[in-house]
Length: 116
Length: 115
Image 1 (cartoon, helix red, strand yellow):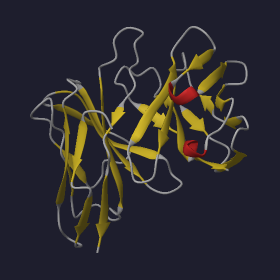
Image 2: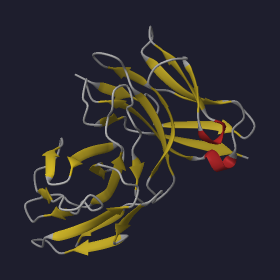
Image 3: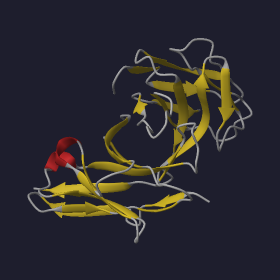
């Protein structure tokens, strides 16, 4: 899983609670991403950030929030507004796109969130 | 709209036989294509990518993929499958002409290699 760490590995949340998933990388990557994985649906992009202090919504941003205060860190908060948060969450990072270089993303080990 | 399809939910192959995991895409502009593998309860690992150049791309663990522009396909192949290749495989394509690094992923194909 490269130099990307995610914590915790497993997380249980009661309905109505906000929870924050951690993602840290030591690969000196500028770009970071959050995906949600559900069985049979592949990966769906929640948020992404190309540079510190800047981030954009992905395809399924509703009910989630992020911050990018440091290059190494891109935490994801799952708010109570997310109606079906039980899923496997994956963080990734990459070097930025440069000319014809479209760099692959490196993934963390994931956090499995379960709503009780 | 950009999209990628993996038409098979599962592929079964005997150990030692060649394997193919299929991927087709729909993009505007030049297709940038990727294959990743995921083992249970783990993150995705990069296998290979096609950006430009030779249509046959070689990657990690003996895998290769053939880019076919006329058929808009990027099938993953391996000449001789191993039981340890059993995993979930994802094909991905650059999102449009994006320079953000965003990818669109297929729904995944489970590869089962039997001894």
